[in-house]
Length: 80
Image 1 (cartoon, rainbow, N blue to C red):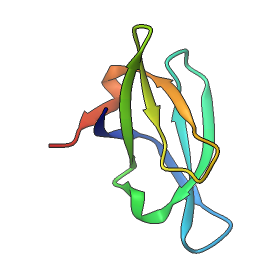
Image 2 (image 1 turned 30 degrees about the vertical axis):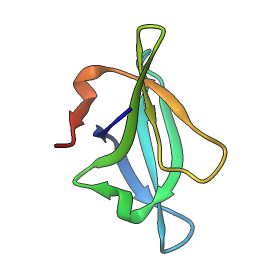
Image 3 (image 1 turned 135 degrees about the vertical axis):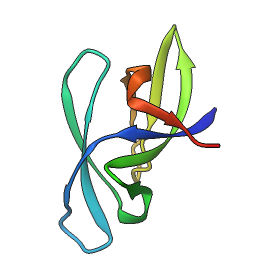
Image 4 (image 1 turned 135 degrees about the horizontal axis):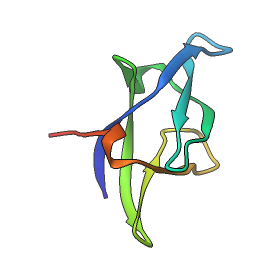
């Protein structure tokens, strides 16, 4: 598993410590999740990336439950 930054749209969350990120999935759907504010920079959210059955899965930094979203490689920027 590696870290990366995933393109997203960012909106205000319900509380001051969170934001809503909207992420485009590998099949083009737009999904929204609450994440900690500090995990977002410059319209990107920091994620863990893993490969499963030939797909790239982005694991968002959400509270439980675990959210793994299939994403396109071009929407990821690897973290050094």
